[in-house]
Image (cartoon, rainbow, N blue to C red; front, side):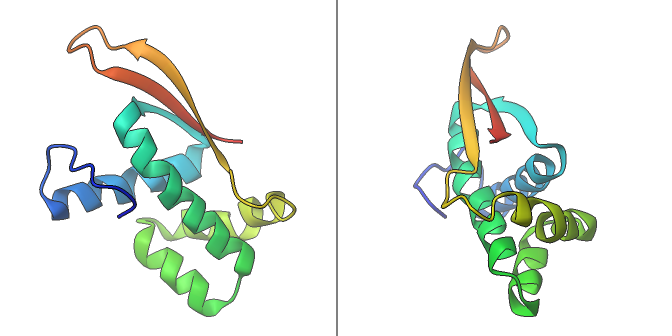
Length: 113
């Protein structure tokens, strides 16, 4: 994992949550979440796009083992990777929104550039 944020969950719960959020981000292109989760999601999503740019069967299988839906993995390799072919990293953007009304958690939008 990229950082030491535990996000109030055990390791298996945290990894399952991050895998699902990365899958949703790559599928829809943007999502609203807390800032700490967005900071955890960004490097994982960028890693999946980088695997797509490198191509190959081994990289596809590695991405497919992390992404929870096969159609999203195919989308990354067929559509997102060529889109970012000329870009050297920095595929995501985090925009801060302010505090959530219910529990005052700092919210953010994470999106693909």
